[in-house]
Length: 86
Image (spheres, one colour):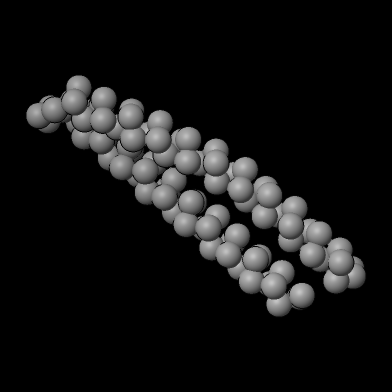
């Protein structure tokens, strides 16, 4: 693989990262809305199902945030590598 091909692949990867990031940002916003509704609905509920739902929503939020951090780091690393290639 030539340097030009590597650069092209990195640029394509960055475009795909941007698309993935946009998708996960929509998911994050939607999850925030759903979480707000669920918390309001389940307010003061001590039932096991309510606790499980709150836990699952918190787990989902952490997973989305982790994915967004990974995408950002990957984009940054690819950009650094592209700059180093010239």
